[in-house]
Image (cartoon, rainbow, N blue to C red; front, top):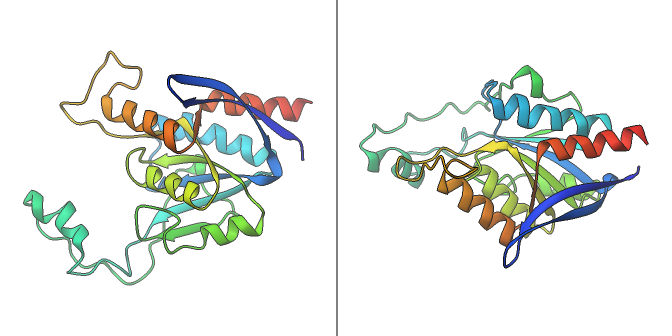
Length: 223
C-alpha cells in the first residue's frame, strides 16, 4: 500500500502548514457520534466524501457511537450537568437494551466496519477501540464527527494519550456556538470553534481539509 502525502495545519508560535507523509497501511478513519440519520452539510460534504475516499484505498474504518444504556443511573452526575442544574426535568432511566444507531445512507457503516458503543465522551474510555487499532498496527487516526468541542474532541485526546497521531478533518465536524461567542468576521463563524481548533492544533494533533484529503487519495489511485 503506497504512502499518503497530505497537506495539514498545526500551530507553533504561529499557524503552520506543511505536508505529512503517512503510511496508509498504518492509518485508520474514525467516525465519532455521527448517528441520528442527519444529512446536514457536515455529513454530506464533510464526512461522506472523505469516508468514500478512505474506503476506496482500503483504509481501516471504524465507527463510535454513544450508548448509555448500562450507565445512566439516578445518581449519575451527568444528570445534574445536563438536566437538573438547568431546571430541566430529570431524564427517565434508559432501557437496558443496547442502542441501535441510525446513520444517514451516505455514511452507513459497511458490514465489516466495527461500530463501538461508548458510555463517556471519549471513544477510548472502556471500549475495545485501542485493542482493534493495535491489532492492525495503526499509528495515525483521521477523525470526523460530533462535536468538535465535546465527544470528538475528547476522543482525539484519548487517541493521543494512547500514542496515535490524530488528524481532524475540519469540514467533517461542527460545534454550536453560544449567543455571545458567535462572530461572522471569523472564518469559523465563532470563537468556540476557533479556539477549539487552535488548542487542538497546538497541543494534540493536526487538521486538514476534506478537499485536500480527497485530492490526496485521488492522486494515489491515479498513480
